[in-house]
Image (cartoon, rainbow, N blue to C red; front, side, top):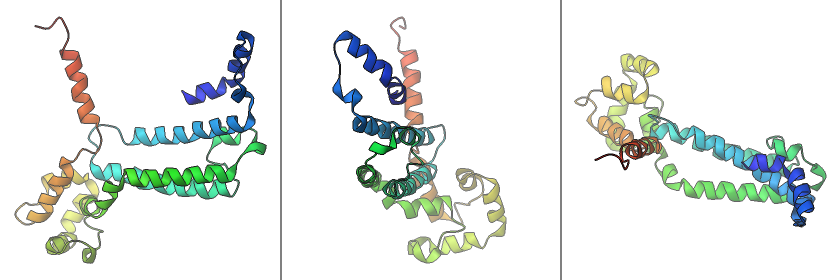
Length: 218
């Protein structure tokens, strides 16, 4: 929506002038640069939002895009401060003579800080997510001691390692990881799978409810 509005700035300005309701900001080059920056950062956020949605997404699948976006924000900030708007196509194709690179770099740093704060709880559980998602590559010395023996046994099991490469994480725990042999790891996996990776399931449920709860239904 923002991109459409930005592409129609000239027409919007002309229309308002003819109606006698001119808005001075529309002709301000600095304001237009700010608008172009907003369009690009909103596009990036929308792309992230799409990745975080979808059916059957677990917490570890949500964590990967989060980490990737954090790294992207750092990269964008670094490029912008070096006067390189390569990852902001709308801003790049605008009149770059009016770009306030330091200002946009500061805004990206604020966004990175707010993003980190917003997903702080997720980051606190990064180790637990790693144990669930990558049990064969996790550093045994860095995980809780009550799980170390089971992880060592798992990592030394070549048969399970092969199955891990061929099965999604939840399928591995569901079909192949014995609750008897790996009780703590199995319990940990159940906790991870019980957490919503996205709001898809909840939204899907309410959509069905809205279809069922109509005024003609007795």
